[in-house]
Image (cartoon, rainbow, N blue to C red; front, side):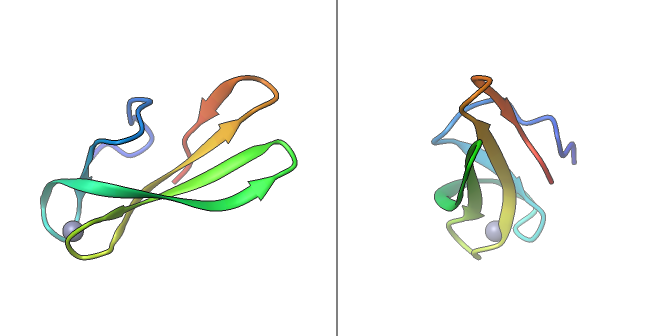
Length: 66
Ligand SMILES: [Zn+2]
């Protein structure tokens, strides 16, 4: 497991700790903040949150938090 080291991509697969494999994920907009948007990624099989991503619009960068 290597959290915090996700590549910057949208529709993709992430490792699900519950399924114990890389799984397709659903991207869901969680929050709209003053400085960007926060997305949540959930396993399509079990619904476990497998990561989230902060998109910072002001700086044009992406910060992944978990
Ligand atoms: Zn899963």
